[in-house]
Image 1 (cartoon, rainbow, N blue to C red):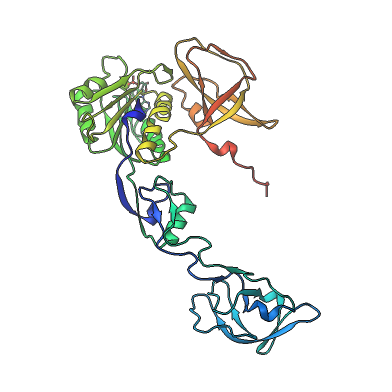
Image 2 (image 1 turned 45 degrees about the vertical axis):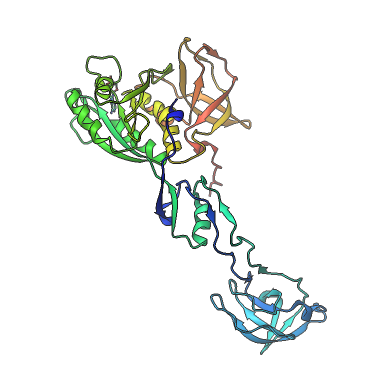
Length: 407
Ligand code: AMP
Ligand code: MG
């Protein structure tokens, strides 16, 4: 339902230097040929292969070195028969020459060079157009600009590029008990950690978080902060979505004209999640009212908000990667709700073994700090035996990273 409601954001122009991780909103069609000319791949001598046809160690061939071509130079002379040109890596191969012999294979004697081998045509030359031809579509619209793609865009002389807008996410927390990390915890106060974890999750998803602050448990305060978020693409609030007397998120959203698309999901943690949108099918922000418990907030962000942010940003792949694992210990639960079990992963005998992080209470935020992934435990299932094959949604790909050599 979330992905149905959400569409890709329109394009904007950005500097290529700032485009890393963004999604192309245009196809990149090259106006250039790359390399633009035949380029020497070595420091050495540009030669005509025909001149060296018989060269060998026992019968080296001498050629007069007629001129020099450095990288960045435009040669205005051709290599005449019986001559060679001194050339450096990255320099254009002058007309007439059809190979470069690297300097390690050449003995120099005054203005003459001695060649002890007969190079094949094209040796050590990067031909014009080997990388890109003018008029070619090099990157499709919808491509994520990783480091390689970004380099390609820059190499084509594009200093600006059209990408999908990055979703701006207004974040607000709600509760009389909440303080900022430097506040005084006396008198039943707790730090609003959700503001931090949710902002970090936004950044990880490629979105731009804008923190609006803490709303006290009064409808006017919540209304004020929600209004402040109306100019963003998405509003994410946490807490105040349960059925307590002071849970004002739903009534205030309704008062502000938000269309509630669903509330309540049969998952644990995260049951009270609310999803809605302002402005019907127009461009008001989407709203996620996440539960307040720190784990519930993070898990519902993972499952519902993150895919939405990825889709808004133009990504075609909206979900976390899933890996096959075996369960390291049995898991039990009642029927009724899908559990999203926080698990660590370890490599054992060539397999990934998933083990619960321990206490799965939705107040134990450390379980999220420890978890490599979330294991969906189906609503109707009650038991998963040790050794059962499972799929884990990967939150942290560190576990898949190759270990260093210990040096
Ligand atoms: P509520 O949804 O308001 O009933 O909150 C559920 C639980 O989450 C309570 O224990 C709150 O203190 C806690 N909580 C709510 N908001 C936050 C927050 N921003 N950071 C950390 N814990 C929170
Ligand atoms: Mg509360």
